[in-house]
Image (cartoon, rainbow, N blue to C red; front, side, top):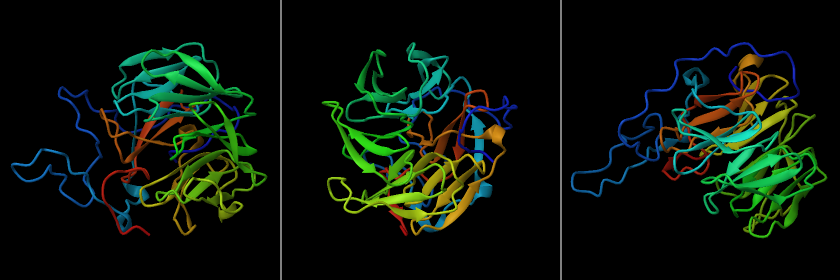
Length: 336
């Protein structure tokens, strides 16, 4: 198996078997956004005489790639522990030896913000241009150019999952609640409480549902939302039998929910109707802690998941699954 979730420490991991590493660094600018291959069209930029704007591949939800077509390779020169994130300029943010790091697809880069200490998951905001990192009980805001940082919110308990929401507020799951933090003021507001043990979360492509993974029961929950992304009813069980320790959750352009789960060392794909399937089943030594789709810029692929591997020497693995994230700006057909 290729992706799993972290629980607590164990024996040092063996070397992770992967396919060949990344391609040589390009000598010409990489077009953006980039997918590993066209999905349903030619990928051409249009007829002669047009503006040259790239035509994004069509995603066909009725023809998703099978697990046998998944390909994985380590991204050399990079490192991450529990989380990573991408910006829209071709950079990836990771972690090494207590420092928040910044690299390109080919391992060029280094320390962005030193001495942060232990961290959990990351996310980046296209609106503020800032990186959001969970460290201890704090939500940090980090300047991705100069590396300066400040504490946006503190006293968040044991926060683990963080996502920039569709309202550009910063959502944090801390095993008891999901809160959102206003990046302009630092004000904290509770969104979900009293149901399950929220640890990781993401939204449906139409933004009418919030999904969250848990610890203990193996249940994934969904919450119906109004136009302001507030719950209109209590959370309900969306899917069961998804292991018992969820360490990552994200949603693709077709509305499928992906869950990285530790107890079974598996990556699950759950259809919008709640049908649970195992997408990957790697050994624990190849466990991937968290889920981040590539940015499609600078060689990072739109249809690949990038996962930190704390049991594999804190490496980062690129897993090409052939379908982009829910925020994909191109055409999507046969949506369930």
